[in-house]
Image 1 (tube, protein in one colour):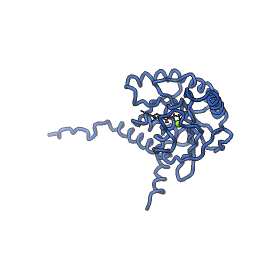
Image 2: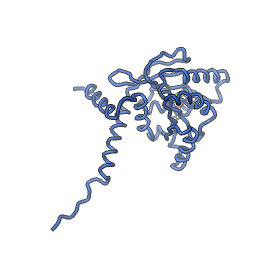
Image 3: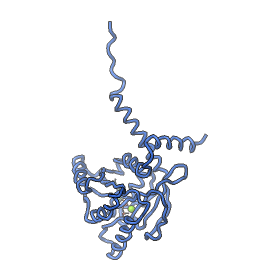
Image 4: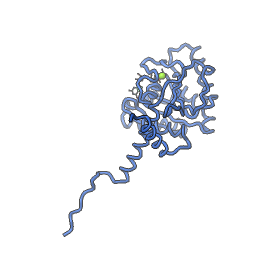
Length: 251
Ligand SMILES: Nc1nc2c(ncn2[C@@H]2O[C@H](COP(=O)(O)OP(=O)(O)OP(=O)(O)O)[C@@H](O)[C@H]2O)c(=O)[nH]1
Ligand SMILES: [Mg+2]
C-alpha cells in the first residue's frame, strides 16, 4: 500500500518563498543603512553649502508634499528632518550623512518646498533661483526624488523642475517620482494616479508612497542604496549589514 501523499508544509511554492526572503533581506539591509542617517549641515544659500563630495540624493517638491516626513520614514527616525502641517516648514537646504561604521558614503538633501501661495513673491523667486542652481550645478548630485501629492498631481512648478533636470537625467542623473500620502487614495485612485504620473514623468520611475502605511518604503530604500552604490550588488549590501551588526553589537 502506498502512503497517502502529504500536502506541502508551506502554502507558497518554494521558489516564491525563497524570492520573498531574499527581497526581505535586501530591504532590511537598505533600511539598516538608511537608519544610520545623521544631521550634517544646513544652508540658506547654495554658496553656504559645503561640497561634501559623496553621492547626494535630493528630495524636492511642493510645500507640504511630505519630503521631510519621507526622509524620517526612510531613515526610521522621528525628528531627523523637520516635518509640519504648516507648509513652508523647511526653509534651508539640510544635509544628512548616511553610512555604516560611522563612515558616510552618501548624503540625503531635504530641500524647501515650492508653490506655497503665502510666501512673498521675492522670497519665492529667490528660492527658485537657489533650487535651480542647486539642481543644475551640484556636482555630487546623484539622484532626485520628486515628491508629489497625487491629489494635486504634477503641477506647473513640478514640470519646470523636470525641465531643469532633464539634461542631467539624460547624462545619468537618477530620478524617481514618489506619489505621497497614498493612504488617502483608494486602490483604484492609486492605480490611476500612477499611470497619469508615469505619462507626465516621461517614462521615469514612479512609485506610490505612504509614511503612514509604510507603503513603498522598502522599495525606495533599496533604490536609494543602488543609486549611491552603483558598483555594489545586493549580496554586498547584505554582507555589509551583517558585518556592521557583528561589529556594532555588544559582546
Ligand atoms: N496621511 C499622510 N500624511 C502625510 C504623509 N507624509 C506626510 N504627511 C503630512 O503632510 C504634512 C507635510 O509634511 P512635511 O513632511 O512637513 O512636508 P514637506 O514636503 O517637507 O513640506 P515643506 O517643508 O513645507 O516643503 C505633515 O502634516 C505630515 O504629517 C503620508 O504619507 N500620509
Ligand atoms: Mg520639509
